Structure formats: structure tokens, C-alpha cells
Length: 499
Image (cartoon, rainbow, N blue to C red):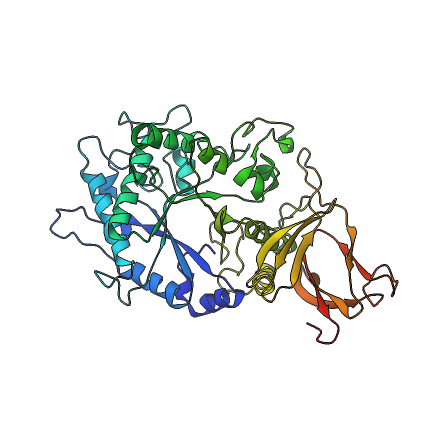
């Protein structure tokens, strides 16, 4: 779950624990921790705020994923001034025109940061909390002013002008050096940490134009050309990316969902009538493969908002659609765990103030939204599950998991219809038959409308021929249920126990 410090509060922390959240992602600002440069008589690292937040995460049982970003002003004086703040943009290249003193300071900061949270009782934060996973930047492929709003701006001013700070070096190449230095510094502090390539957006649409599509390839080319023989190459352990289910973006990929972006390939986008935004471009995994690399993936942002502005697509921007995608998105990720994908992170725990309502909790009140109940159902239903394989069925998307004790549980739904211009409608509901023994019944956990676009989950037990068996035949050894766009958890259980 993406967080912004809310886990320091008792209510949101309890809500996160109650939902079954395991990982918590949070930003770390270099500028906030080291506001003055080394050599300044008042120089020091200001750890206090981060210490408290990390301690809250770890003490509450979450695995932290911390994302480094936001350089101090003294390290970005070669960047132009942001007219909105009057300060230099601090989302991209670090000064290195005259010498490497600022890059050296960054390297020293990373080593001190990792050392503080490695749990070895040497220069540790109070209580020795452990952080194992680090991302070097959020969406570093961002370009120009707009990219800066989303975290990173190492993509240059544009795809044709990648030297935004005008220092004579391509900004993606400067990111490659920052990644290399961060990796070496982190490993010098602790060989146990895992370093992720900064989470790339790697997408384009008519309204999303501020990401450099060539950024990742440029970075990987530079590292390969200059350091392939180095034993530490490629200077990251995990490849991080973002994948939203907004159909306009999903339709850039085949298939039009997380799988397509992670492992498929770019296609002409039917949402825009066949526009060449990502067509012919490799998936995130393909970018690695093309450079001879094989690294696990992290999807450090997935999500769907619930503001109600887009309702003629699947999933819609409603409480129902958001709840639907919580289960769909994470079940797909679980089918790739652990070799292909290490984890996925929902954006966000609480509705952001400056963005659409992506959260599981309402801003201010921390009231639980329908999506919170979907997340809680997902984690309780699939606790300890191991992915077995897909459900082979025309018109139905399904995943079979082996549960502790050996029983199988299937999660299934009807996928959207083929996308067309400005539309990706829900698929048509379809019946599905489950074989049931004489002493067995079907246990189904499914969403229901609780009114006012509030959605909850119910457990239904269906014996052969009983209420809910749509074929109505008590002697045919099967139970038929209706499958629609909302996921359902299904397994066989003995009649006697009810569970």
C-alpha cells in the first residue's frame, strides 16, 4: 500500500492492519534529511521524522518499501527554477558540471541511510528497524514540468531534448550514474538490501504525455555499454514499474492489463482508434530481456479511482469498479509470484488530497470505503495461497490456488470485452459449472450491493440442486453459478462443516 505518513496515526494504521496489508511504500526526501551540504558548519542528517515513520511501519508489522527522491537545493543548482515555487527543480539530475562533490554527497547519504535501517546495531535508528527494499526514484522517466509533478524528471525536457539541465550530458545517463552509485553505496552498508530501478511510468496517451518512452532503454544501454564487465552490473536487483487499469493506458498493451505491460508488448491503441503511443515497444520484462537481464519485477503502483467520472468502461470509476479491481489486480500479480513479480502496491491507503480518490480510506475521516472491504476479503480468502494455474474457460478469466491443507480455491470473473474507441465495456455474464460430490457443497464469496454504491462481501453455500444452483438439478453432480464482472472466490467444502 502506498502511504504518505498516515501509518503514524492510530486509526489508519489499525485500518491497514485490519485489511491485511503486508507491504507499505513511502517516499524519502533527501532534501529534508540533508538540507545543508557537507562542509557547512551546521551540516547534519535530520533523521527524526523518518525514524518515527519507519519505526511505526515496522512495529506494526509492515514490510517497508522506501522510495528515494527530492534532492536538496544545494545539489540541483544547475536545474532551472520552478516558477511555482521559486526554487530549482529537485526531481532530476544532480549537479556534476564542475566536479562530483554533490554526487559524492548523494552516495554518502545513501550509505548512511541504508546503514541506519539495516538492523546491525551499528549507527542504527532507535530500535534498529530494518528496511530491506529501496527504490531509486519515483517515475524517473518523467519529462519537464509535468513529469516533475509526478515525482521524477530524469527524462529530460522532451524526448528530443534529454538534457534539461544543459550540462552536456543526457539526463537518462545521469540517472544511470545515480542508480549505479546508489547501488554501490547501499551494498557497502548492507549486502542484504534489495535495490529497485526507480519505478518507471513507461506509458503515453493523449492526456499523459510527460514520460520519456526511451528513458529506460537509454539507461540500460548506457549501463551495458560502460559497465557490463563490472561484477555489480546492472546495479539493481529489482525492476519497478507502475501499471494503472485506466483503459486508455491499459489498451496500449497486449493483453490490455497488467500482464501486457509486464510481459506482453505494446500495440496500436484501439481506445484512440489505433494511435501509435506504445506500439512495437517491449514490455517492462522485454526491456530487460533485450539487454540480457533477468530481474524480478515490482509493480509499485496499481490502482483505480472511485470519483464516478468514467462509468462506461470496465472497471468503472466507482466504488464497485475500484473494489472489483482490487481483487483482479492483486490476483493477477499473485499468479506471477514470486519468480516474475515480487510484490505489488496499491495506490493509495488514503484518498490523496491532490489526486483522484484512489484510496481504501476516505481522506480526513479514514472511513472504510468499499475497496477496503474488497482488500480485506482478498487477503483473508487467499492467506497462504499458492498459485496452481489458470482456469481454462472461454469468456471467463480465472485463477486456481492451492490453499493450506491442499484444497483448491478458484477466483474468477468475466473480463471486459475487446476495447474499441473510447470504450471497454464489461463482458457478458456467463454460467459456470463446478463438479460437486455427494457430500460436498460449493462455497462462494462474492460482492453484493449494500446500497448507495456501497459494496460488501457475502458467503453463500450451495449444495447440488439447492438454492443458488442455477441448473436446478439435485442429481447431476454439479453446481452452476453465474459469473460476471465482479470477482468471486469459489471452493468445494464438506456439507457437514459449512466451511
